[in-house]
Length: 139
Image (cartoon, rainbow, N blue to C red):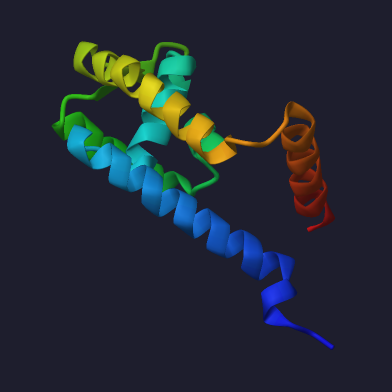
């Protein structure tokens, strides 16, 4: 018989929600959200990333990315520049302020990762990732 408490979708949703809420709480003092951090991370890791590529990496639609980048530009964290080879494409870069924030947040993200995975072996973590990947592939 079906039990919601044993349902993988329900269990992973609860876990994801709790992880997101805790990471957001830790980011509050920096004045950013988890979504801001993810964008800052990917932009810094992929200098000149297009809005479309960023949307794909973050698994959100392009209009959401456009609004997010509008806010981040107002906060002077990012800047968009037209691609010289394709004027329809905007490339996204971190400003000096955005890069400083990224550098200051990386240790926080590492600490969070360590806190969340405390007591898990590297084999357990690898198995966990493989299982989640298989579940997503099944969809």
